[in-house]
Image 1: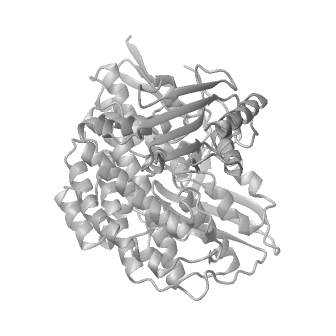
Image 2 (image 1 turned 60 degrees about the vertical axis):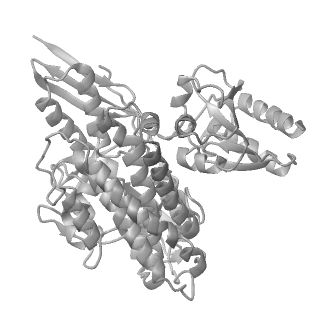
Length: 148
Length: 429
């Protein structure tokens, strides 16, 4: 049977950076079929370790750059490289996008790797999710829980 | 008149947000500034009024790369204030937890952040393409560091098991022993790491640094010791304030730290290595000598080799601690608050981290001071840049810019740790 995983990345104390974390926390309280869910800070090596052994992995992360606050973009990372502007969105030096590209070079990506990027508005320490991101998080949780 | 400017708006592959500016006029350096502009954080202020029990967990949040350093320095300071002494198995567990952090931080820096500079790559992705087995093994070694942190600290990033007086719970002998086979593999990999980094080419860049690190009579310094320097300083953490002064500079959020208010100094792996070579294991000493790195090593570019040597040390130390581990009767010693002050220092992967707390008889924090290693090294980084550019004025601008970035990455700076100043003022070119 196909092993599925949803990973929420981010820092829960830095405003919209918590978007991915919030999604998987809500999913943990719901039922998502046979899909596992877990949180990750976004540190690249830990992320590569997290997806190891799974066939179908979805990463939910906040993004900066050419994306509007609350906008949701989907990217099939096994098929093509991430947009270059996403590579600067992480607060860590070896982040999500680096992990994906190193994983591609090492041939250790899952069969399917989907990135769900949520455009962030505010990333300062101590702030809550912006209303735009909050709405997207709720919509995304509904979508993921209704998927077969 | 001929002038040129080296300007890097965003320094890649350092933790946090920073940039650097070097201005050259008539073939002389007119200005060097390392700009730190990550928004300042107010940890020292919002620790006031919190209970001492919360401090290790709050300060751990200052950094995702070296949270154990913040937990250990805060515990040292508070335990010093309350007259608490942690020893035996609990002390060893702290040291083991710290070994995990050294391994994961050093391996990340050496392979993912710093090695690309030496190999002419833009990033770690290119190393992964050209040296896939090396990168796979590096990730496996880093994972071992994370695993040690998970077993001892409760989780890999921002451990939750550390408390003033010890731990909330201690691991079983079985849980720790399960790490031994991987540690055995890691010893070979760490030796390979030393040999790989020793084979890189290094610019001729010796500098008359004053090295500052901890020193302990019985061991290579990790989580405690006296503060010593290569120019004769030998003090306790409680005396730190009398010898080290922080000052504001207009172009950075982070404070610059100076010895006796005037002398820049260097802390971190190179300082630890030079001041404590005699405390390294015979294997570490032998591999260091084979790698051509012997104290006093005054070339910061060789810090990548020293990080590899310290990785081997941490692997050996972790093996030793786990092999001799017997779970203690209690996970922590009793802590009774009293009105007092205390200072503590430990060796974060990138250098000494100083904490000082003033506490009430109820154990509430009245005042806090935190001096991270990047803050202490910042003036030295600017000196290095000035000196390096002066010696390399013939390089074209692109090459010079890359080399300047590399010189900053020699320090493995953690800029997000170093910003704790209130005033944001960025000097524009």
